[in-house]
Length: 268
Ligand SMILES: Nc1ncnc2c1ncn2[C@@H]1O[C@H](COP(=O)(O)OP(=O)(O)OP(=O)(O)O)[C@@H](O)[C@H]1O
Image 1 (cartoon, rainbow, N blue to C red):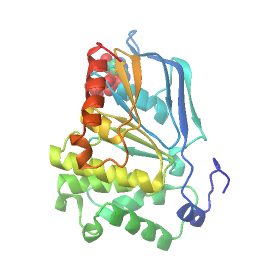
Image 2 (cartoon, protein in one colour):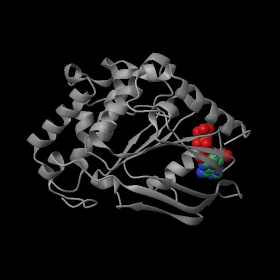
Image 3 (spheres, rainbow, N blue to C red):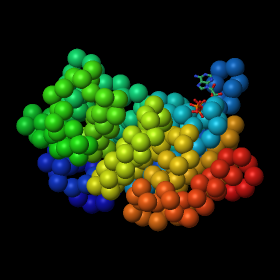
Image 4 (cartoon, protein in one colour):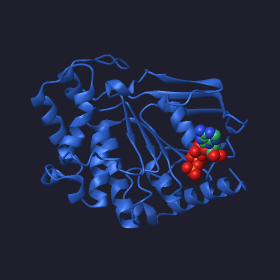
C-alpha cells in the first residue's frame, strides 16, 4: 500500500499498519455567539505519527481545538487540514474521553465491536471478532471480554474505551483528558499502555491534559495555550523508550520545569 493511501479492504487493513495523518491548523479562530473568542488565530501542526499534547488553564480553548480537528466545530476563521483526510465514519479517527462512555447493555467485547459494526464497508463477523479479541488482549482484558461494564473496575472500563477507539486502527486518535478521573497509579499504568499501543499502531494523537507529567511522558510535542492563544510548542526531548524510570531522570525534571514555566508565562 503506498504511503498515505487508505484502503477499504479489511484484510489489508489488518496486515498493514494504516498511515497516520498530519494535522495543520492555519490561523484558526473560533468565536462563539455573544463574541466569546475561544480560539484566537492559532497556527498548530500535529506531525504524522507523533503525539501532541495540549496543555493550559481551564477555559483556554484546548477542547475547542480538539473539536475543530474532529470536525464537530467549524472555525470562524482559518482552516484545519488533515492529510491524508481521516473520516470518523470510516473508523479513521478514534476518540477517548474522560469518561469511558460504554454501552451498559453490551459486554466489553460487544462495546469494542461497535465501531467495526458501524463501518460502511462490510467486514465479516469472524474478522470483526478476531480484531476485537486481538485489541482486548493488547489492553490486557482477554479474561474480561464477556463482562458487562458494571462488572469492570474504572481502570478496566477505560481500557475497553481505549480498545474501542483503536479497534479500527485509526490514523488519528483524539483524547480529551483521558485519564483524569483515575488515581495516580492507574493513570501511570494507562499511560504506559497508551505508549505501547502507539508503538504498535503509530497513529497521530492529539491529547488534551491538565497533567504536565502526563504530557511529558506521553508526547513528542507539548502545545501550551493561554486564553485562546497558542503560547509556545515545546519539543519534548525526553529520551525513548519512556518507562517508569524516566520519571526520575534529570531530563524529565528539566522538561517538566520548561512546561511549568511556559504555563506560568515566565519562559518558553
Ligand atoms: N458552545 C459554546 N458557547 C459559548 N462559549 C463556549 C462554548 N464552548 C466553549 N465555550 C467557551 O470557550 C472557552 C474555551 O472552552 P474550551 O472548552 O475549549 O476550554 P478548555 O481549555 O478545554 O477548558 P477545560 O480545561 O476547563 O476543559 C471557554 O471560555 C468556554 O466557556
